[in-house]
Image (cartoon, rainbow, N blue to C red):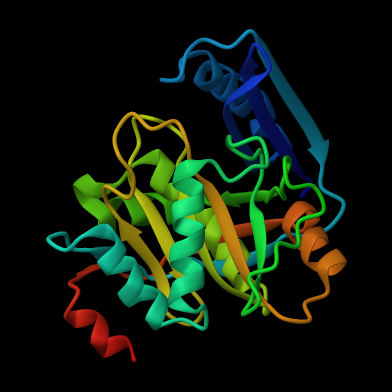
Length: 262
């Protein structure tokens, strides 16, 4: 059965507004195109003046993955205190992780704004590896099956959002690469303050109020091992089809309970 990638990107006055993608059988392409078109027109960041839709048949079979386990981090402690604890559970030095968290809040691109893609950071040096520091690196050719999405909606309950589903799908692909140690993400949507830190061999830690409400800055940072084959890594991110076909647990964890992950 042939599968097709359907991608949507929208912008206004040259500034990115939204993007989404699906991987679907040929008979669902028309339905998905209309759905993504409707989504582009109704985004909270405004009505776009440019919408791009791209449909292409996949040239290779997707890799099917189980979603990362999700841990909702309970509030009460300052955000940096939570991040400090989480980074201490990873192979990313705490000072390096917090440094890039602060950079995301200030505007991580050379121009001081939001990068179109993600930053790649070598651990432990902190050296940025992405070839274009304005564009960054995009993760593409991803989706989640309808069955897995329904199960995720059931397990997350009233904490489920479409943003969460898509972020978990993306992060599952990213952390599946053997040389990715962690991913930090803050949405650049001023109305969406929830973000996450995904850690190799642990899971996806969902953090609420990761940035001030109304701040139109954010982005993604991929922390990778020293000596990574950068060309292969970027090819994996940008071209390897991945579909999340099942989900793991969704639970909550406090600052004190994080010690159990050691």
